[in-house]
Image (cartoon, rainbow, N blue to C red; front, top):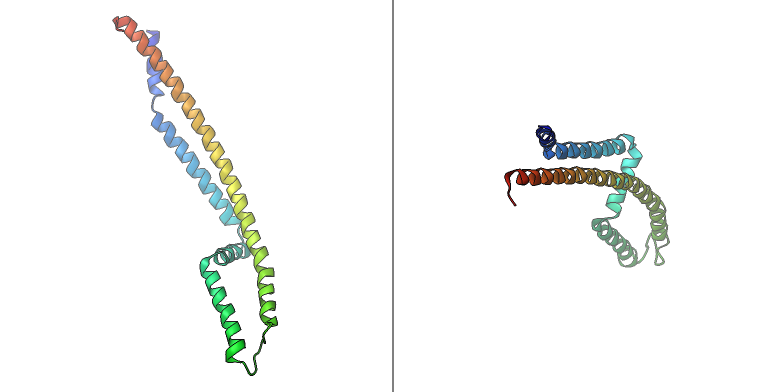
Length: 161
């Protein structure tokens, strides 16, 4: 009779799908907390720097940038050859480019720092999920070992090899 109670206890805990559902729910809640944490703490300038980094790191920006550069040079070299507003060494263009680089670099770095922090928290969440998975695997292994013992016991009782 004690074996029957042991079997019923094991099979009551057999619903591994509930365990998986609980673990999935925990992971989803953790991801939602991360997103809420970063969205609620972002100020207007933080969101702006993320947007600038997104645009500044795109091919569209690079192509537009080259179009503007070549247009500037062609305009000052050929179209306004008699009286250019920025003659050949393009000192004014260099000034604009230096200012753009001086402003854009720290803005992109700020966005990357925030992304790195978010990635670190996600990595920690992955580690937590892996540990939960190991815990589930351990429970599953224990369950399989116990079931194997029960099958062996039943085989002995039924004289089956």
